[in-house]
Image 1 (spheres, rainbow, N blue to C red):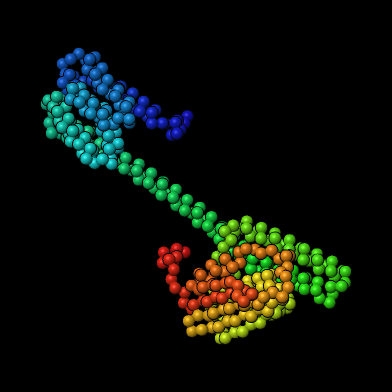
Image 2: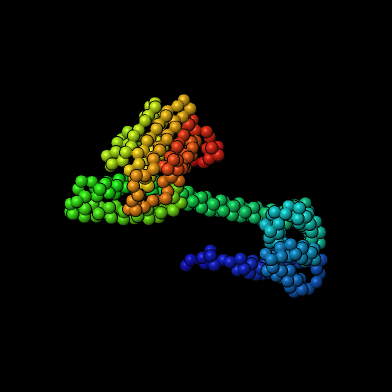
Length: 391
């Protein structure tokens, strides 16, 4: 046999059991003892019924703890009912745990009522009986107070635990979002750049010596069509992975950051690009080298898309206070190819990447062409993000 499940013991059922027990004890106690406060001398059934009636008000002890305790205190003087008063004092101790003045008032009232009731119920009682009786009144009050405080502490701990779990979920979601953003960034940086070069190379073949050969033309057209579709699908994937379209720190530290390699690759795809370097950018910290590489890569790609045939000059100047970068392309010599859709996130991501390093990025048209200028200081000034201590 197993007892009832704790979930079945609702507050109302507990109140019913407590009230029934108090009524039974009050009735039986008054029936067998020859005294009962100021009712001493009355017929025993009257005393017993009076004690039972007083205990019955405990049914409302949760909804009206103060009123019920006041009624029981008044009845205690008339019908000596220590068990009923102890239950009432326990209830009011928990209910008024946050109102210490009211709780102190109930304690003083209980102390006075205990002395008066004891005097009427046990005229011959000594100090020991008086102390025992008062302990049965004040003791339950303090126990009820302690139980109420413990309940508050448990509730606060559970709420704190819930907050911690919610924070963990938010941190986990943020980590997943950062991971998706990192994947989107690298796909844009690497895959998008490579596919763009493939489409550009295919376009160059169509205007080269092999343009008159039908089989070459068909193959080139298929490459351009597939490349364009790949770029469009890549953009859709990037929008799913990172809807905000923002670049975040954390690029792969094994990425090639050599500017000479990047410019040579642009030349290999038919782009008239040249590089002028003052200083040693290869000695810069990796985050700065990676940022420079990304700015140059994006500028070359945009020039190839929107200014085909235009010469592009990349200038890098390593100064005492930082490194300055300037990428300038002149006006296009032929119309831009419609086969290269724009991802719409490159320059915005570069601005954030450069800003995270304390630098600046300025872009815009110039003399019919387009210029991209960036400056990265050697020592990045602290930001509000750094001062807040957020990882």
